Image 1 (cartoon, rainbow, N blue to C red):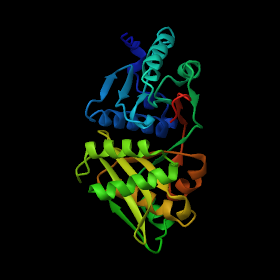
Image 2 (image 1 turned 135 degrees about the vertical axis):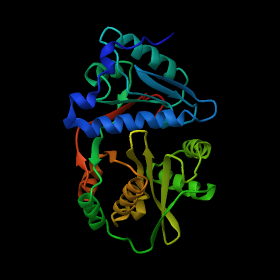
Image 3 (image 1 turned 90 degrees about the vertical axis):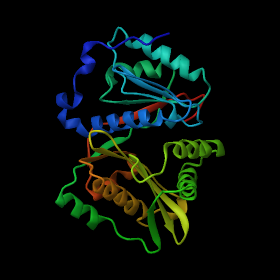
Image 4 (image 1 turned 180 degrees about the horizontal axis):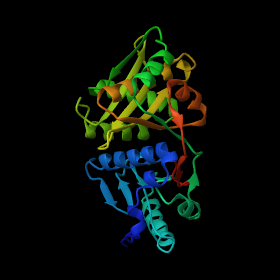
Length: 289
């Protein structure tokens, strides 16, 4: 069943309407464009139109099967939400619905819950504008960690180390780790790719990860800042997050945005990020994240 097209209001720029929530809009837009990029995966089904973005890859991770940047009128939204949810949940693979203020959040949240989908605790969008002063603060706030070497992921071995960190941090099943390997092998690891990964080795052992995605507007989204449990509380997360920001700025990013968990807010504030807005996603609890 085709999804109805949006009402004309969806063409309004939410950043112009709500400049105080710029981080919220930027991270939601950046993530939506990352979903489109992931649509390059062989066999992926990508639906991109003014009303929403829907990606289906069939990989066993909700990060690769998702809906984002949805905007419908109150009359259209109930049927559109139900149609999409029935389709994706019927495929029996984890999927997510991302919701921020660039979507029609006030209208959609109760509809998504009723499908039923379960909300994951909201994350806080944060923004850093690269200036001489903000970069000085970044450098001054992140301290080198003895024995920690951060490098760009350029080959299959480094990619496996990057995924190992993410899997250990999130306690993933093996099929989830294999999904992440498959996706990023397919997207490529070249130095000119808009999606770049960093892996941190502490005395030769992979312990930290981070990624940057630079969209067409020059906004760099920071993703996947993870540290294995036994290497936490040593400054590793601050160092690799700062390295990700530096890499984004070196590649010409005009703004750097991310969505922080509650636990990491202090870390990013120390690095110079400002918190604005909210961003969350919903999962089908029968299928997992």
